[in-house]
Length: 385
Image 1: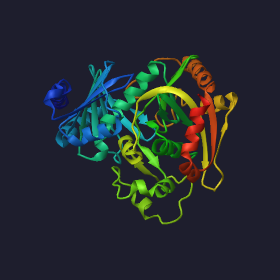
Image 2: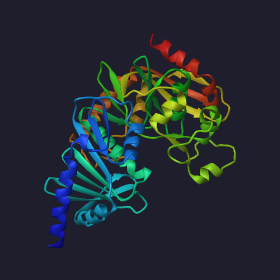
Image 3: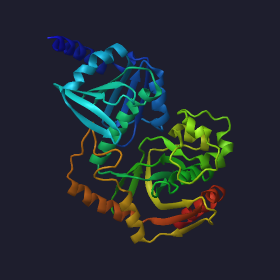
Image 4: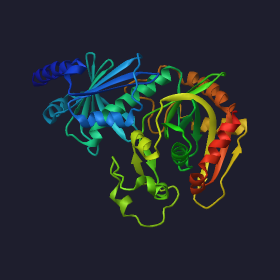
């Protein structure tokens, strides 16, 4: 009986917040891209600030609309938490696990790890309510993570594929930057954004959609992780800079010469990247070039050489993280409806489309790239003239 009365109170309150008009919340932010549009509302300005930092640029659309309400209420969180313990568990990411319970047309998710910001998520169709226990920066990011998840799964349903790659664009044409972890994708993204007039699309993960006629790349909002060496080499950009996400104390204490591939890194949001590189963001563009980054820190001369269609296809295939991404898995709020066989057929189509574009291998010392980015950009542009 106690659980039943608690459940009734909770459901009534959930319904009130889930259907509360946007005009009745203190703060709000709208964003859209080709796959979906989103409205985030909260009485905590911090949650809206985080949305502005990651969901770039701010645009409007008429696609599937996702509503996310965010509130901080420790008492409500404590009341709701027991209701989520009646179901099973699911992995939202390789290191994020939720307890999930269903009540009628509502789904309740409670974070199951004490090391993460305590919160529950209530879902009814495409309307979400996040109840956080405390007003922390990490909890403020939960609405962005919900929208990011829905965006990815909707883009996949629309024919897109998840790619371990970065992307920038200039004059309506995008360069997709491939490479293993630590190969210099982020450094290349930074250099082209800061020194060659490219706009930022994505870093580390993006969504691609291709046919035999053309291929497009779309943003997927993530923080941008910058190595110690890049931050030191570009010290003029970081003078007196206050990172929104505070660097680890162990990173700040390090005084040794930076080594290529260090795991501890600084993090900036897409909006911070815009400010630091004096550039803009865009959410999608036709793909014009493929770059395979193979940067080092050994003083090697910089060279950008053509990449054969065969080698480009192999690199693209390695970068496609389908049907299950090693970090972001197969989905937890939305599930893919296609079979793995259908996904593999799409991989072949996208690989063929991208492999026919102008493709290059970018080798050499990362500092050389920072000094000669204009030459790299000129070679890219002239290859498609």
